[in-house]
Amino acid sequence: MPVAINGSSMTDRTRAHVFVSGKVQGVYYRATTRDTASGRGIDGWVKNLTDGRVEAVFEGTEADVEAMVEWCHEGSPAADVDDVEVTDEEPQGLEGFEIRYE
Image 1: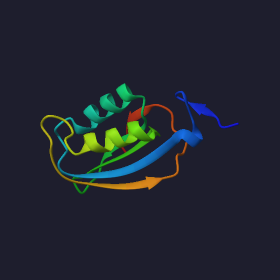
Image 2 (image 1 turned 180 degrees about the vertical axis):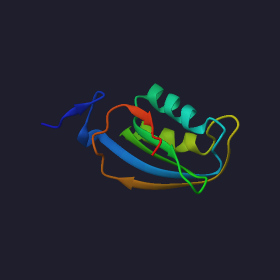
Image 3 (image 1 turned 60 degrees about the vertical axis):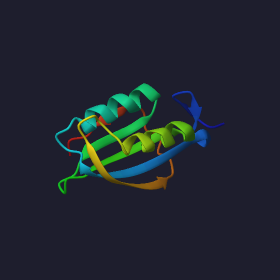
């Protein structure tokens, strides 16, 4: 029997790995991503990259993950997003959503 995480089984979950470019650092993009994802019950993480992009991973139901990917095209109110690159991956069973500082 599949393990349930946040109310959905692993077979019901999907994972998107995204890279967001544009004016996305220093504009509360990570904090707003965390708050939006947490509000939707999405698991994963977000972090700044040294090249100026933001990287994030979203795990949850297909509809919720798709909604988060769409949200990334706008981001926080002060962001100016140029591009969002998305790769679908196998869910890893993440729990919670965090900002990473590595």
